[in-house]
Image 1 (spheres, rainbow, N blue to C red):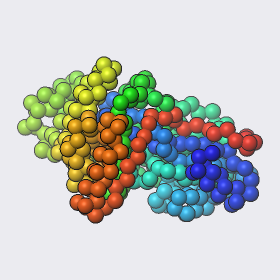
Image 2 (cartoon, rainbow, N blue to C red):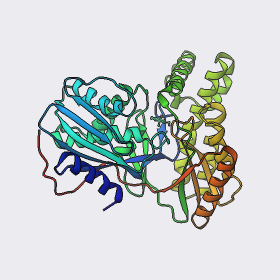
Image 3 (cartoon, helix red, strand yellow):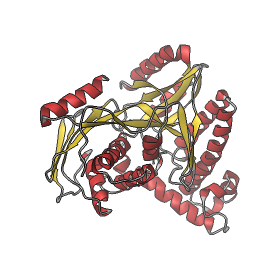
Image 4 (cartoon, rainbow, N blue to C red):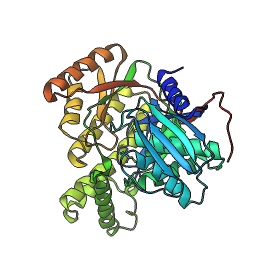
Amino acid sequence: MDKDQERIVSIFKNTFKHTPALFFSPGRMNLIGEHIDYNDGFVLPAAIDKGIWIAISKNNTHTIRCIAADIQEELFVTTDAIQKQDGWKNYILGVLHVLQQENFSVEGFDCVFGGNLPPGAGLSSSAAIEAGLLFALNELCNYRLSTLQLALLAQKAEHSYPGVQCGIMDMFANLFGKEANAILLDCVSLQYKWVPFVLKEHTIVLINSNIHHSLASGEYNKRREECKAGLSILSSLHKDYHSFRNILPEIVEANKSVLPEVIFKRCLFVTQEIQRVRQAVEKLEQQNLKAFGQLLYQTHEGLSHLYEVSCAETDFLVAATRNYPEVIGARLMGGGFGGSVLCMMQDGAAEAITRAILAAYQQQFNIKAEAYFVKPAPGTHQQVTDAAMQSC
Ligand code: GLA
């Protein structure tokens, strides 16, 4: 048994004195397509083999007790008093709130969750809680929601009490993840296809800068507003420009004079990134990883200079990878303002290069970064245990 799994189950049993149902809810990486899930783009994320275990059981009362094992904090609330609080509790409460809004009966339950997914590292720990809890409650209470409905509800939950106007990518990756595959998701139609992503000679390393971002701090929502403002100007120029996917970067360049400077930069990034994802999928299908990696570097440049969601620490990490020819691509990943950098490097050299980059980072900023070697993995699923499932 995985040691985190054992830990979570044992805390549950010691606290609640019975056997829970057990679920694993993964974090996600995003290969390419950043900040375009809410801008009509295509994204290429994958669930990863790191995540949280959720041990959960109905308790036949109206109380909800939920323990965040990794930080030893507890949420205690009754089902008739679901309201916004703060921090991680809002991920749970947001889920319960949207379920109630949609007229699903929310009953009392006991829950312990935790694992090996660092919060604030750009690996979607919040979506892991929201989508994981929804998945678990759907099983436990027989809500009969489809996987897509779960993803949409999880997104709604994040919009609610946590207040982040996120796109659908994180929840989608969490729920639709598949071993050895990335997911090419059309964020408008929500059509998707799995794209085989098995690296033979390379490995993916996520380097967590340990600069903690808080998307709710407003910068994320501000980017969303800026893009909306840009699209509204562009769409007034031509009837086809109602969606970023119909607008080429050249069109944005040609209309620079009618766009405020910041808005111009945001729109240029979005339209370039939409094109890059198309190219990246082609390169991947041709197994041209070198060219794929170059696109990752280009994305980083755009995130840093046009979308302005990077910071000195993540820029440093990406720049450091350029000292090693064995690294074929690297970029800031996720919402930004800190968080993690995704690096793609040659297998044999990966550990030594990562150690050297971590050391250089510590010397430069006096901050300890952490590295995770990850693989595309299955989405949220139930782990079969001896727990008898109760039904609502
Ligand atoms: C966060 C959001 C996602 C997405 C990324 C940036 O992870 O939750 O919806 O917008 O940032 O690509």
